[in-house]
Image: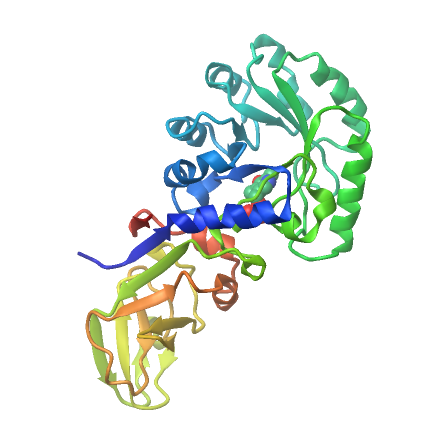
Length: 347
Ligand SMILES: *Cc1c(COP(=O)(O)O)cnc(C)c1O
C-alpha cells in the first residue's frame, strides 16, 4: 500500500478549542467548511461537538452531511445560492446568512421559524454583506421574517495582523452600528480571537486556529501530519539534470530520493525547493512538484533507505514556514489535500 498519509490527532482539536477559550468568553462556532480545511468535517464535529455552540459550512451538501454528526446549529455562511435552497433550510432547520438583498425577495414563502437568520454587514472588506446605507431598511425587512433568532455578523479583512488599521476601523464600525440592537453579534475569525479582543462579541468563528494551521505562538498545536516514504534512491553525478524539463541540476554528486506524493495529492505546484524532514534531518526537494511524485536531494547522506518516512509537515511543525516556501498560505496547504491521501485518525 502506498504510504502517503495524513495523520490527524483528534485530541489536538480539543486542545486548540481549550486554547481559544482562554482568549475569549464568547461562544464558539467551529468553521468546518471545505471538509474542515481538509481534515474531515465528520471527525472534527464528533470530536468537538460538546465544546462549541454551532458549526458553519458553505454548501447545502456539506450541511446535510454534517447533520448526521451533530444536533447543534449549522450555519450556511453564504446563505442561499438560489431561492429554492430555502426549502432545504426550512426542512432541516439550518442557520443561514443574508449577505445581499436578493436573498430576501422570496423569503416570505418559507417557514423559517426554527432557524436563525444571520445578517451580514459589509464593514470594509467589500466582498459580501449589505452596505451600511441599506442597513436600517434591511433590519426592518428581517424583523418581519419569523425566525427563532437573528444575529448580526461581519467578516474582517486582515485580522491576522495585530493592530492592522483597516481591521481596527472595521471592528469599531461594526461595534458602533450594532450597538443598540438587541440581536446577538458575531465578528471574529481566528485572527481576531488572538489579535482583536474588542471584536469578540457574542459568538466567535474560528477555523484555522482549531486546526492549528496558524497562531501556534498562542499555544495551538498543529492537528495534522503529512508524510510519505522513499520508494527510490539513485546516485547522480554533478551536472546531471533531474525531473521534468531538466529543471533541477545537481551541483555536486548526490543521491536523489523519490517519494509518491504530488499535486495529485493536493501539494501546491512548485518549482522552487521546499524543505522536508527525513529521520530528523532537513532536506530540500529537487525540481518541480510532479502530479504523483516528488524528488528530494539527499545530498551525500547514504544512511537513508527505501521505506524511510519523509515528513512534509508534522504535528510539531509551524506550517506557516512551509506555506511560505510553497508561495501559498497554510489554509491552502490543508484544504487542498486530496481524497487520494489516506487519512488516519489518532485519538
Ligand atoms: C472561513 C471563515 C471563517 C474562519 O476563518 P479563519 O481565518 O479560518 O478562522 C470565519 N468567518 C467566515 C465568514 C468565514 O468565511
